[in-house]
Image 1 (cartoon, helix red, strand yellow):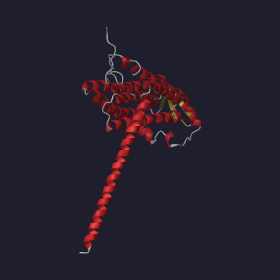
Image 2 (cartoon, helix red, strand yellow):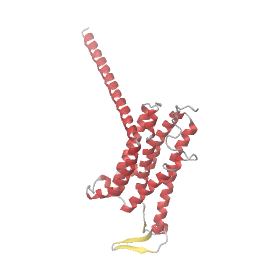
Image 3 (cartoon, helix red, strand yellow):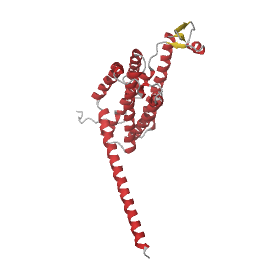
Length: 292
C-alpha cells in the first residue's frame, strides 16, 4: 500500500521528462528549419547576382594563376600534399560523379516543380549528359597530347635512359616510364565543375522570386550543392598548390573555362540546344502597354 504514491510520482516524473524532450526536439527542429530557410535564401541571393558570378570567374582565374605561389608559405607535409589523401581519392578522382549526383537532383526538382513536364525536365537534365561527354572527350584529348609529345625512359640509379619505343603501350609493357606533356585533368575537371555548378545554382534565386514550391527537401538539396561547390573551390586551391607543373595547371583550367564558354556561354543559348539554366521555367512578364 505504501508503494502506490511512489509509483505515481515516478510515472509523473517520466511523463514530464518525455514532455520536456518533446519540446526540446520541436525547438531543435524549428531552429534547423529556420537556419535551412535563411541559409538557402542568402546563398540563392549570392549565387543569383550576375556581378558576383562575373567576379567568381575572376576568382577561379586568380586561384589557378597565383595559387601556386602559396606553395612557398604552406606546410609541404600536410595531408593535402599527398596524392593518396582522403579528399583526393574520394572526391577529386570522382568529381564528375559527385557533381552529377548532387546537381542532377537539384535540376530535377527545380525543373519538374516549376513546369510539371517530364520532357522539359529531361531536356534540362541533358546538360549533364553534355558535361559528361565534355569530360570524357577532354580526358581522351589529354591522353592523346601526352602520347604525341612523350618519350620512353628507363629509370636507372644514375638517372633516366631514353629508349626508342614508339608508343606508350609498348613503353609501359617493357616496364619503363612514358613522359610527355600532361595537361592537368584534375584542374580541368574542378574548374569545369565549379563554373557549371555556379551557373546551374544561380537559377534558384529566380525560382524563389516567382514564389514556386520551395519546401525543406529542395532547399536542403540546394544547400548541399552549395557546400559541394565550396569543396570544389577548396580542392582546386589544394591542387594548384601541391600538384602538377604550373603550365599543366593553367592549360587545364583554360580548357575547362573554354568548355564552359562553348556550352553555357554560347551553345545553350541557341534554340537547338538543351537550353540554358532556367530557360522556359518562369512565366514572362506581360507588357502593360496596349497597342493602338
